[in-house]
Every structure is written in C-alpha cells, then in structure tokens.
Image (tube, rainbow, N blue to C red):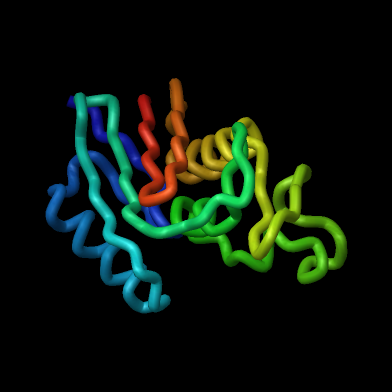
Length: 144
C-alpha cells in the first residue's frame, strides 16, 4: 500500500499515520490559535482521504467560492496573505472578492493552490480535490 502526504492546517501528514494521531495533532494546532473548530480525518480508500473541519462560518455569498477563513484551516496560510492591503497589493491568490468580513476565492483557485503546495512538498501527484464549504463545516476530499 502506498503512503501519500498531504497538508492540513500548515502541517504535513501522511496516510500511514493513525487517524487518532492526525486528529489529535491538528486539533492541538487549531486550539493554539483559539479557533472553535473540531477536526476529523477519514481514510476512505488507500488513495483517498477526507478532511472535515466542523466550524461556524456565515458565508456572505453563494456560488463556487471559498472563504479565506476556510483556506486558513486547510493550508495554514495566515489570513493576511489573502488580504491585498497586508501584502502590498499582491495577494497570494490572484482573484479575491471582498464581501463582509471575509475575502472569497474561486473554488478553482483554491483547488490549484492546495494542489500546488501539496505536490511541491510531497513530490506526489493529486488526482482530484473536492472542496465543499457549508455553514457548519468544510469538507475536503483528496484522491491521490
């Protein structure tokens, strides 16, 4: 069975690590930042995982957009990197839509950013990523 690496909240994990260890490690990181998030990890198949972040986030708009707060949970990139005024006018992600207290990023940009970061760190290809934000949780499925 192959082992695959992936990024969760700025940490590198892999599919050979036990579920409990991944969940406890990421929960500790999220707690250090005073985030009210409950994290779940599921190995669906030998080459497919599911990351679930239970959280409250009131999405100001509908559509295929992901809030900056959700990208912070997934990648661990500081929120200020998604805000043009903090990075000299050139944000980490090219397309940002400000609504309310969050910036929103098109789903395709999120997919490409996560894929690029993970593939560069792991040297492994990602076949598919599904990022599904809901009011009470963010669910991410990754197929290697």
